[in-house]
Image (cartoon, rainbow, N blue to C red; front, side, top):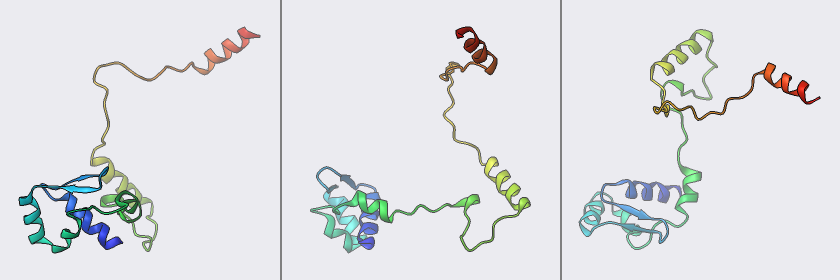
Amino acid sequence: MKTQHRTFSQLIARTGMGWDPISNTVTASEEAWATTFAINHKFQEFKKKGLRHYDLMGQLFNSNTATGFLQMSSTQPAPNSDEERELDAAFLSEGVHVNVNTDGVDDMEELPTLSEAQSRRQAEK
């Protein structure tokens, strides 16, 4: 099953190949199929019908592996303080992906301060 999932994932990732999850069929021109079959003959099994339960298999077989600065093997010892600082610095130097609100409007609701909340409670009594 894992091999089939990997093969199918490689197939639909190729340029010119598409996948319709509703009908479970791979969509492509005959030219794209011919090029794809020349690369890997195992793709032929999916021409008429896609991989059954592809999405569920993805939950089982897709890799969820950390890469880059934060990767750490379970066999590695835990980092010491100096190593942690280096990891933090390396991570922070890579930049942060943030959706910045550029219209100048703050969508967050302002919460009352502690003193305002206490004043309200005392006024209610």
